[in-house]
Image (cartoon, rainbow, N blue to C red; front, side):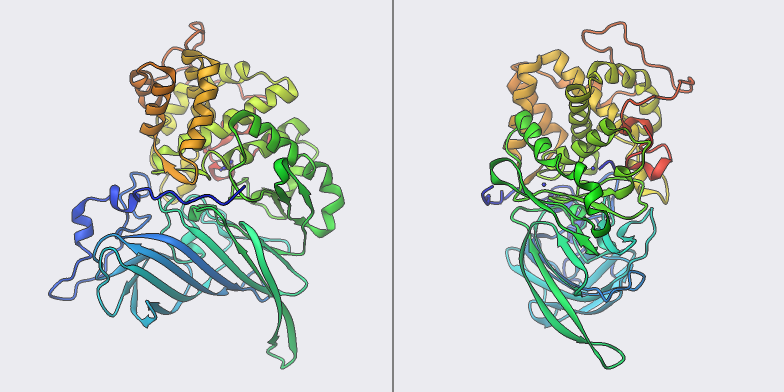
Amino acid sequence: MLLTPRPKAVRPRTVRVAVALLATATSATLLAASAPQPAPPLGIGDRLFPHLGNPGYDVLAYDIAFTYRGDNSKPLDALTKIDAQVTAPLERVNLDFAEGKVHSVEVNGVAADFDTSGEDLVITPHARVERGERMRIAVHHTSRTVGRKEATGWVRTADGLAMANQADAAHRVFPCNDHPADKAQFTFHVTAPKELTVVANGLPLASTRAGVPRTTGQDETTRTWAYRTEHPMATELAQVSIGRSAVPRRTGPHGLPVRDVVPSKDRAGLERWLKKTPGQIAWMENKVGRYPFETYGVLMADADTGFALETQTLSLFEKQLFTRPEFPEWYVDTIMVHELAHQWFGDSVSPRTWSDLWLNEGHATWYEALYGEEKSGRTLRARMREAYRHSDQWRATGGPPAAPKAPDPGRKISLFRPVVYDGSALVLYALRQVIGQPAFERLEREWVHVHHDGNATTADFVRLASQISGRNLHEFFEAWLYGAKTPPMPGHPQWKSAAPGTKLPARAGGGHAAAAHGDGVHGGRGHVHP
């Protein structure tokens, strides 16, 4: 996020981090015991979010139904169906879920007992599920629109709702395995009053009208909308928009369907921004290859979020980003490209752990800055030199790029600090200096090709960079990704990084990411004043 989705592809069968990251002993806690034990909250052992995700299964698909009755302050009725492959014998099954009320649970068509533990929904099937089995879970629940900016999940807009689930808020909306390492197919069914429009990730399946009784006894006509993704998606990237929206459509490169979602009343005034998207997609394709998903568009929400977010195939933005006069056009353009770049870096190629976040944000910032250089004359070199000045301070505050410090207590999105934005783009700049531009560009294309629709790690990137460049880059990356201090910049020995505590002048127009992400401005994710 600035916190930051062709033909249908075969889903790669990667080994899920739900097994790989968790010690065998943790899985063993799920095995049958001779006496009842308290249901523990679990996680897959992510260093930064240890309680996210759950061991013992791989989610293949979600099918989620919401009923919205026109009041965004009230919970939605919901049914979440999960189709999963069991990877270890499970006496209990943990799902991440908070905020909503669970009415009933079924496992493989049979009612199951359930309880809560921390932010886990702990399900006890009627019989233990065994490794290799398919497991189908159905949870009838509510989905609360709590409206807390720090927590996110559902975001209340002026005319309805949208989603912002990064980093760990999808489980505030629906039960899930809430870690990007477990990607899955998604289908959404959303019933809403007929005057509202619903758009979600992926492509539409169908919509229907139905009579729903009012409490007064009169009939209220509603419409049910259905969407499905053609590619696996991380839970943090789910998006459902409900509101009085216009959905202008246009065609992108290679016939790609582009659909945007904007408040109906603002449709004409926002057109000058909307029409930029096909050209921006073509620009990104020229850099890294074919757009990786079935559709794209921007969602301009009438809401005060403080961030933009790369929800897959439908990036979320605040409407005011496009309407406030103090934001220059070049600045807004680069933010649009930042979220677009995430469709390759972060959405199609998702991080295996949250410590790999620099691969998402560093690349999105890189292409944001490169677009600014090519289209507005704001040189990448000048931006990187300015980032270098701040780099030691960012590392002291937030940790090195590939080993970021844990989020601040009670502010999980504070993980999105400057070091993962411009501080990580700086690593890519140094890499290009070392291996040369032709090898760097081959690496970028190969990276998104080899790992499309999957998950990848920092070690994977180091390995591929070494292979393509024909040189061992492990020492280079060790210093640049894990060092407490920024190494000398190759080719620019005169560049200096200020010591922690040194007062530096405020940056002026160097781009949104390093300017304020994680400094307490807008909660550490999103666009800010240039």
